[in-house]
Structure formats: structure tokens, C-alpha cells
Length: 94
Image (cartoon, rainbow, N blue to C red; front, side, top):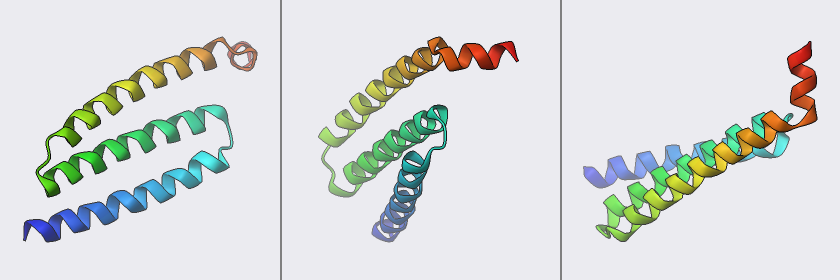
């Protein structure tokens, strides 16, 4: 029964990865792509966690934690970049 639940969860995560990749490619704006990239990494974290549950190898959990931390720092860096861009200054004055 547990294996069936893991398989169904993996299918949903893979579907989310595909849809998020489409949003990452299509955009249309940079903030949309940043959010899509953040969601993509969180789905990968979920997949690594699910894989650790399925295989019983705890090293995948360590990789998931590291990936989540790096994704958080990357999102903060992208947010600062977007905030300092000339386009965001023009949007703020409107």
C-alpha cells in the first residue's frame, strides 16, 4: 500500500515538474521565471524526499535539505536583483 502511495505522489510531482518547466520557459516576465524556478527546486526537494522514503537511503534527505537552502538563497538573490533593476524603478513610479 505504501508503494502505491509513493508511486502516485511521484506521478503528481513529475506532472508538477513538467508544468513548472513550461512556465519557466514561457515566462513572460522575469519574476514569473524566478517563481517558476523556485517551485521547480521545491518539487525536486519533494522528489528527493520521496525517493529517500522509497529507498531508505537517508543521504537523499541531506541532499534535499542542501538543495532547499541553496534554492532559498538563490530566490533572495534574484529578488534583490529584480528590486534593483531599472524596470522595477519605473514600475514603482507609476
